[in-house]
Structure formats: C-alpha cells, structure tokens
Figure 1: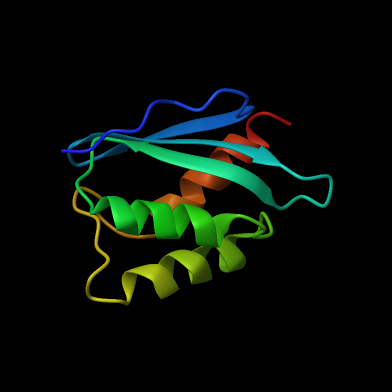
Figure 2: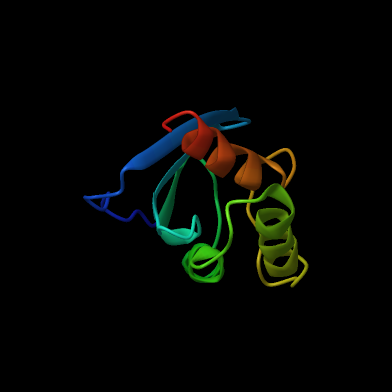
Length: 104
C-alpha cells in the first residue's frame, strides 16, 4: 500500500463515505474558479500512477460537474487505471463540488 502525506495549504476539503471508508479531497482554487492543486486520499485501492494522473488531469479543470466528470471518465476508461472502493466514478466530481460549494 502507498500513502502520501497530506499537503498543507489546500484550503477546500470534502469527505464522502465509500465502500471501504471515506474518500477525502483537498484542493485549492484559482481566481478563475478552476482547480489549482488537488490531493485525493482515503480508503480506496488504486495504483499510485492512477491517482497521480487523475490529480494531474484535474489541475486547471473548471469547477463544473461535466468538466470534472469528463476528466475522471477519461482517466478510468484506460484499463491500467482503476480505483477499488468507489461505487461509481461520479463520487469524484461530487466530492470536489461538495468541498467547493460547502466552503464558499
């Protein structure tokens, strides 16, 4: 198992219950309301390269459901990229938006 230390300075945060525990999302937002930096953590199983790719692709993404969903879907349509513990991929954009709208 691989675990990253929590990054400091990520001002937005949300947690969503998932099958194995929780999905935690921490992030910052640009003045243009796009994701500046993001860190996914929690109780799921995924290759480190998958999480790093998803986080990379989400940077610069507008804080809009369809844009966030498209990034998650594009990432997980590749067979080498998977995440176990999420019931469905919409949990990713849902959690991000919960963190953003809950802290405005």
